[in-house]
Image (cartoon, rainbow over all chains, first blue to last red; front, side, top):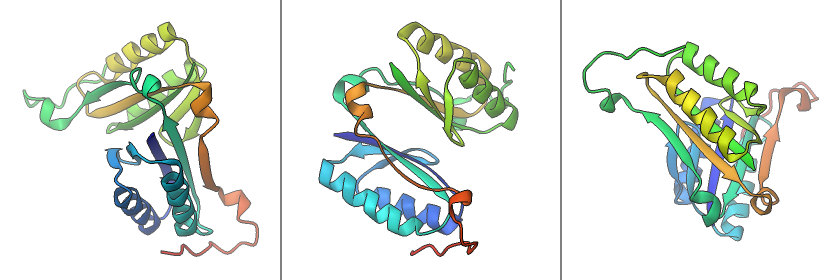
Length: 95
Length: 95
């Protein structure tokens, strides 16, 4: 089942280790603190345990969202990446 | 339907405005750049449009994940919040 892992982690070294763990389990980074990919129930629980151990008693919050195919078809995205802002202006936010 | 909104946004003023919009639409902050709550299809699209307008041509990436009740029951979390680390040590990460 596709799974989204998102996290707020205070210590840089712990955050780095958690992102490495997510990659080790085949997840792709979709945002700075968000990984996404296929995990079966055992692997999801195994990853959760390893992240919990890695976090230890340091400050952090990690969520695991399994996402079924039906929900996946409803996912939406708004995206402006630097390389897509072609004409060089840094763009103006309308707020 | 419950909806998770996660974002990476470069400019502070845009990020703040997007978080205000999420609150305006009744979502709860569950992480620094993640909001969660009930949104029907119209409201979800309306929020997406307003966030897109707010982002304008500045750098950012926002995902909207609708989450059905069945998936919701599978959500897991690992959490250490400062106030829960009672005995004062800043804790040791095991990594």
